[in-house]
Length: 166
Image (cartoon, rainbow, N blue to C red; front, side, top):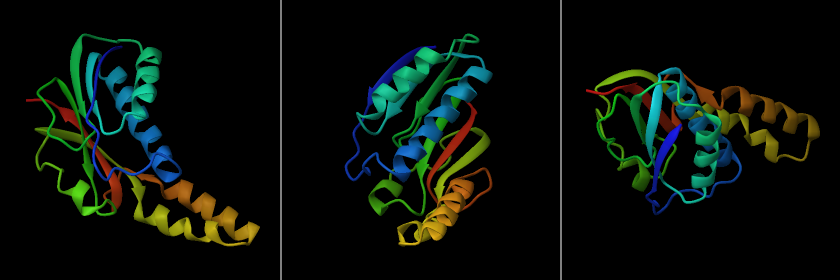
């Protein structure tokens, strides 16, 4: 897939380790998977952190162009530009106020799906992972993984909206 990549580093963006590293794996996988299945051959992508650049380039190399449609992914919380397929990232209730304020309302004319990533249920389920009991850590780990991503509306750190352009 042809990739036009730009990095717009966001102040206050979390370190890419632990839950945020896992979250960005989910987010990028969903964008590139949907782009492939939607026939996107050329994707413009805006990322919020330089460390994500290598992740995105690798996914673009692994994703063949299936069609000639254009795609635009604003994964820095900004308003996406016009394209046939649009991906917009909103920062949800679990994100700091500075990141939440970047979230544009109505960024996609026709939202077809939403993906809520690093959800409140996952955060709460992960609390036992900090305890010194192996069984409770395992229960916390399983609960965190089970609730980490949701297609149903739930309080989350990230919300990826996917849809068609104007």
